[in-house]
Image (tube, rainbow, N blue to C red):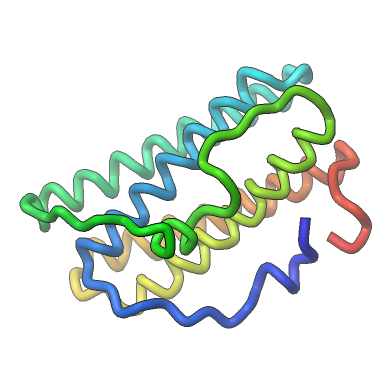
Length: 166
């Protein structure tokens, strides 16, 4: 897991229109919901499983909010999400497995980096979105992603999954 400073590079985002922003955001929320669901099923600690189940539910709700906006404002959109687009909101492979503490450490690192990427993406896109409803949603979801990042970072420290520098 990279230090927090390394997770905060100045990022140039491509010129995206709102349907593209929404498609990328939906992808990110879908991956996050899936990953947290896997963690909620695989971890031995019940407290951790409950937390990840709750975050998975939140991410699923975010995905549905975004899908509703996409359906409302861009019902005929068919934007193809490239690997470069996916990398704007997801770190590491989409599919994960957790069999031991090393896997947990690795997945937690990906989850932290992904929450940071998503938060930064929403922050940037909220200033570019033309539709106030989309702009407001991106602002809210960006704040929630920063909150998830802090919750995950606290848990990772408590479980000894991060070094002192992270």
